[in-house]
Length: 429
Image (tube, rainbow, N blue to C red; front, side):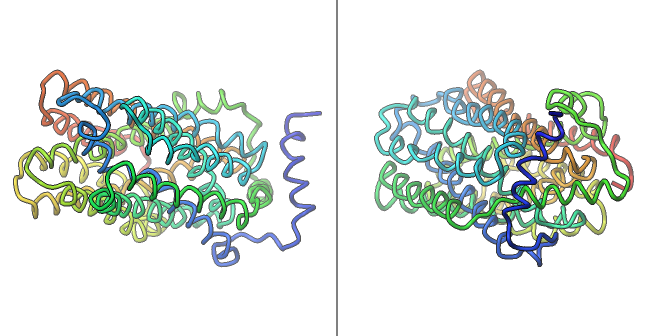
């Protein structure tokens, strides 16, 4: 049996067993589309709970030595590595086993996390919990996004990515602030335990009982592409990886931008809570400023994602990279809460401009047949940025014994990466 027939069999079975009509479009599939947005929101909550509390209380609650900046960055390094690898394989796994099955795997692997956080005796426990969260993010987020792209029309990719990232990163911002309050009320371990257990169980149960398989919609996209004369030969994951990482200059430009933009998110995750605490802010005050970043990022994507469907992706991506770079550079030059709040909002706006549109642009350049795999490769490089960025920033901070040098590094990297995209991507992209 040929490879193509093997890949078609599970899709054909899904067509035969599905009772409802298969039509593309968000409106035609609004119920399932909404349920996948809830999945993304819950995935965002699981990682958002670590954004303020874990770095802020690393020393007092989790046994990390003062000024151990490299060890502080280590949990984001392992998160980035695990999530990147899972992103790489999630698309291919879902083509073989189905989107829903992989989504369920992602929630099941996260089930031990609340108990690890509750009984954590050292920083190594936090590292292990973060590994499991990396699996959860790589599988669940990828599947919820791919399922929405399956359901939507091919002309709605910008909108899909916009509302997807709105749901996820608004949740990241909300979770950071809510867990800061819970920790203040109940204690670090107890607050994280209750919050994470409720979120993870909710995600698992909703995925099991409300989500349906969307592979038939993915196959319909492929059939429409064939009917329109768009053909593509079967390629292995290794061949696609080489194409996206070396051969195709447009995909290479987008993948490097995805990697570098995670430097911005990494510095806000790892070092910004500590930096604000060093400036005399409380954990709740730090959480509120960081929440501004997450909420502005999330909410603005409701505009920037659909906008890219109308005016193109390139300008939004490039200026988003530059906004983030300038915002990060401004933080160590400021010393007022209102200025930090404005800068957090400015960085959030930059992320909203670039984040959904990088993924949508990859979808633009990807053949329908290989879209899930090429988006998975993009997400591999993008989330590798957590690992590369946190590792480099941790080494810089450890060497200099201060938190200023990582801000200069990230700001410069964002400006240069945006320039790369400006020079390579076609004008009308």
